[in-house]
Amino acid sequence: MHRDRIFAVALLVVLSVILVAGTDAAAPPNTPDVSWSVRDSQGRDIAILASLADDGGAPVGDSVLQGLRSNKSDVQLTFPETSSIKRMSFKNLDISQGNLELRVDEVPIKGGSKENFKRLFAIDPSSLDFDSAVVSAVAKGSYLYKCADWDFDNQICLPVQRSCTGDSKDTRVCTVTGGWKKIQKLTPGEEYTFTITPSDPGFAEYSSDFTAPYCATGESPCIANSSLLRSRDNLGTPEPNQPGDNTIDTCTDGTFGTYQTDESVENITITDYNATYFSSGDTIGVEAWVYCYGTTDDHLGLAYTNDSNMATPQWQLKEFREDGCPVANDFYKAVFNNFTLDDVQGNHSVRVYITYDTAMSPPQNTCAVRSSGNSYDDNDDVVFSVNGSPAPTVMEWGNKTVSCETWTT
Image (cartoon, one colour):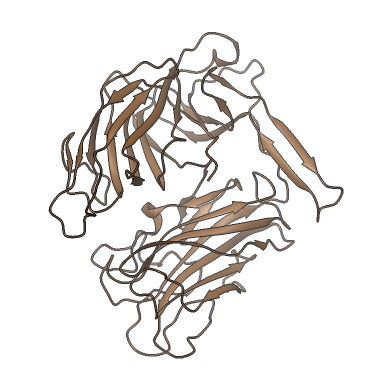
């Protein structure tokens, strides 16, 4: 993970909270006491409230966090009413290090390129290990922008820079950094949310056109988090956006089993290793968190297509792991082999699946289907735009008056 990216949002905060292991049999024997330190760029602190969060992100406790099941916990931070941020809800936050540090900063608006902003705030989560965090705030402006590279200590957005190496497309590697980018429209006075990760995120939203998560901006990485993919089909905790199973074609999920006992794909991240925007011919990597039932009969697959807009996309099986899960009854992060995007512009997709099959030679398909018996398969697709150009759209200030929120990464 890139730990040098910073998310803008303001606050100073120091909080000491003891996380107490409960009586749950699944809790580790030596769950550590945990203290929080949340400060601004000047080292000033403020008290906040931390609590465990349920599957929906709602708090389930007070500042003494009890009933920890593991060192990976869902935690919600609640900020004072005077803060720009109302809440931060962390998914799978690693609390094993004991002392957790977060930097949050309210950035003064004082002329220059900042004069058209209604509010500036910055978040630096680089010292934390987590899957994703949802930030909630009440809008003052009309649009939300992010900065690709924010200097937290000096409170400035670094200018756009693009550098490339290599003389041909096959050898070219480009890096684009800096600058502001519009993220979403806001309604002043209404609460809004956005998601951050330890790396600079591209935002996926569910698309009813594709019936799957869609990263429309073409920005890397493209992240479909658990709010879009968790669970499978209509189990006790149903997968979001049913019916449709989060696939772009007729591939469906198995209907048997129990959530967090049997197999499921929980989230998917797609990363371009050549630039900050997906381009045809680039090398990409795919990571996914899955829930494994067992270590012998659970199998993982990665498929890819460059024609997501077709009624029947032509899928390519990129990888199949016959013994895909090294753990049983737990979450597992699968890192698949890198591959090259086809030389086609448009909407491409990846599919990650997990399947349970006891056959000696389990079928290696692009849609997981058990050879016989009850089906516990989960197939999840993520669509992402491949534009053929790594250069981002950069906001130009000119003399235009912009009323906007801002956050930076």
